[in-house]
Image (cartoon, rainbow, N blue to C red; front, side):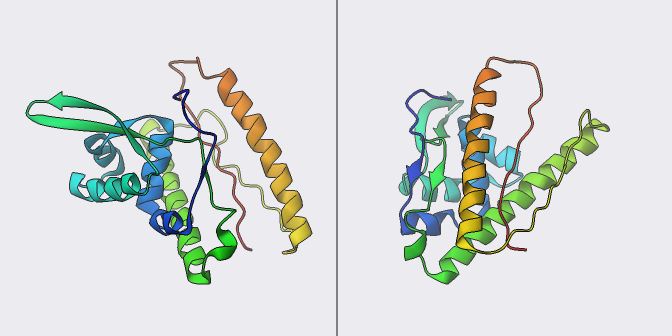
Length: 188
């Protein structure tokens, strides 16, 4: 991860609207991990380069991603992009969004998660085995009250800090496979 990354991007309502697309969120999640070109993203996502170019262009114009370098591939200049922050924070604009904008964003997040799950299923099927317990689901049904949600957010913040420390301590590890940890709150 580049050293000049900010800890988070505080997004505007317009940026939230641009992010309300599962493909754009998938692209962001991939660019969070490592820089990539349009052709690399297209191959990984199973989309046409034209489709990925459209989404990358929207993200770049919204300042949610940035170009890092260009490489010549034959007669083509291939531009690589990255996410300039470790995360995106929409909390400070959330109350200014219309209900339909909130719904569109949440549905995009769920669509992105569905895509990640589908990719994980394909990886498991390709390997023919799983070395650890994948897909452990823990369900906790809590009251839909501000105090309960605030407490859950505190627990999640602590979990994020711990996972970041764990990720940092293993950053130098090479050759080992990686696992994605997904933590989310959903209405029950």
